[in-house]
Amino acid sequence: MLKIKNWIRQEREGMEILLRCVPATVVTLFVVSVICMNLLANKTLLQLDWIALDGGILISWLSFMCMDVITKHFGPKASNRISVLASLINLLTCLIFYVASAIPSNAGDYSAFNGILGGTWFILLGSTIAFLASAMINNGLNWSLGKAFRKDPDGKLAYAVRTYVSTFVGQFLDNFMFSIIVFVFFAPIFWDGFCWTPIQCAMCALTGAVAELIMEVIFSPIGYRITTKWRQNAVGKEYLEYIGKGKL
Image (cartoon, rainbow, N blue to C red; front, top):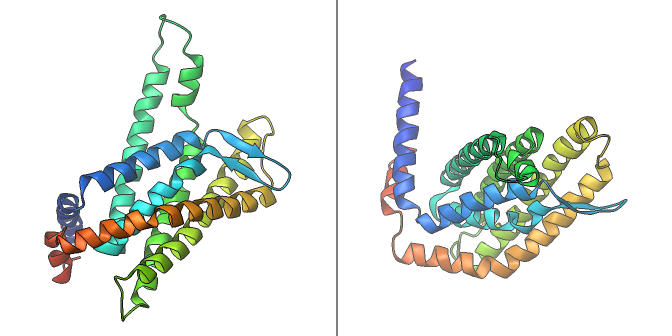
């Protein structure tokens, strides 16, 4: 029991220090992108025999770019912490949306509004599980790849390789797990037989990963400049010193 209490105290202390150190803009963009992914995933943009895409593909690249930036500067555990925080805020937002959609109103027809904000529980379940699992894999892989560049760990090549590879793998797993959970297991039961095939899920995951990798390639120079500026300005010094003492 004492070990559990010490662990909880240490985790709380570490999170408090981390939130003081990570620039608010990156955390805000990360949280907003996670919330938007959850909403956009309700719409299927394209469905063919061999491919299917949902609206989450339009914003998920931003979530992974933010994770890559945080992982590069603060480490994978810090990025995992922020990912869990974003998921909790998303769950709270969904709860508020649901309550708002359930409150009756005689001011007009809000059926479409309520349908969107009310959400679907299995989409929320699928997106949360897929996001958290893929986030931790992405962050761990990103950090491990970075260690391979011992001569120039802060160079452009090192940043490009670690972000491109981890983003592709993470995005593929995120898309695939979400598609399988939502469109293979739950959709046929709750959406009158509507479903995706496993092939569509795999192609959705692959196509989405490629599309999001392209977005990562386009915007990675921004992420690289951010991490370079953070390093030059000693951003997050308090947290980095804290983990340097072996407290996290």
